[in-house]
Length: 263
Image 1 (tube, helix red, strand yellow):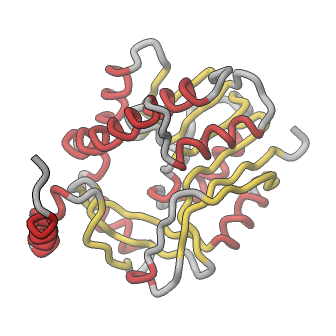
Image 2 (tube, rainbow, N blue to C red):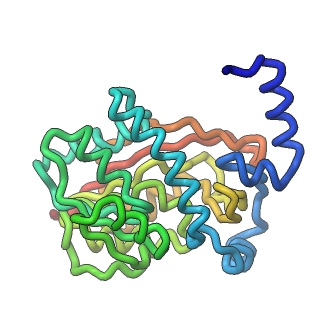
């Protein structure tokens, strides 16, 4: 039975007013701007973050609903954009590495939305994430590893796809360089939060865990990719994500397709 609107509104206010409730019910809450990179490193180093099994389970539960919507023919915009970016490479059934693969749900996205599919490999630094991925997709290659030191040869994949993880990698410069090194032809950086201001480090609670999140200065990010030997081919607007109330600057998310120079 659906609760009356006024009851739902009162419930939402109660959740937001209580830190314990909002952190364990809301997907994202309690944002604050870090003073800089060093504070972000110090605080997140002591947090379980994405390594905690409970955090992984909560994130997976949220995405299971989105996957179900996709299978009903209603994919969310980020799923559609990810598939469009892969199609834009023009490679049929590419070798694709997803960096920061989480529990592997983008494997299902690509299988559903791409007619030719992909030859998929997933890597994530979280053992808990990879454990869940292997449980759900036992015939697919998943590895525990570091985005800043990928355990693959130069050009091992047609496409390196960073799926919604660059914003959580504090050493993002190294992650971009490693993505470029591991890609033979293309890199895709997907659902990247950007604004026209200096790169800003945030802390927040995501699925109950304290994590760091980055809102990138788009100009800095483009320069970093260029210096890594990447050429911007296309960009797509993605999920609206304006954290102006926290940073004082309007932001959104975008997805970028880069080609390797001389590929």
